[in-house]
Length: 192
Image (cartoon, rainbow, N blue to C red; front, side, top):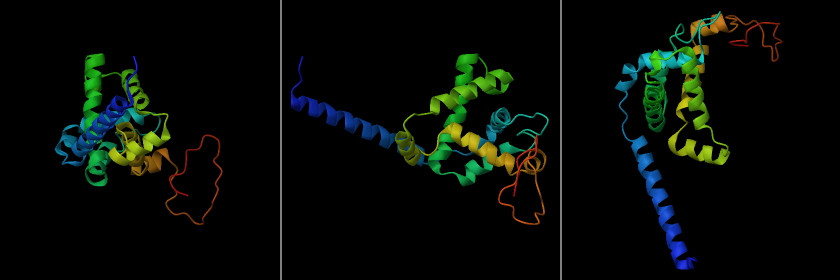
């Protein structure tokens, strides 16, 4: 069955027009106002997600560093509207995924289940095409899991607990040293 050239072009135009409309609607939904009061309602979920990324071991974890409060403040005041929307939808997706797959919300899951859930979200957001990822980031902002990891790491490392207990903090550096060797078993430097 052969399709003549006019029909093929018409199908291509229809497909491209549909794709443009879909992207436009998705972009518009992300740019419009975001209900940020949901962040304070999801504080415990954010705390458990960040604690799963940086758990308490022999050093303090993300909960000890109050990373959830930092994440809420950064999402509220430091992210663009599309990224705020992405973060809020991502929080809902985590709970929806846990209820559908595990029969309970994220907070009720065990540590192993939480790690598996976050691994699933990390793998589902990864794309092999760097150009496609750059276009997506430009139009819609960074993905939920990338935002979560980034905010958790920044919040933890810039907290007093993270900078003084988990990292080496020299509160009064005497000279600039461009390259400092770490001793065996030494933590990374909070500052140089």
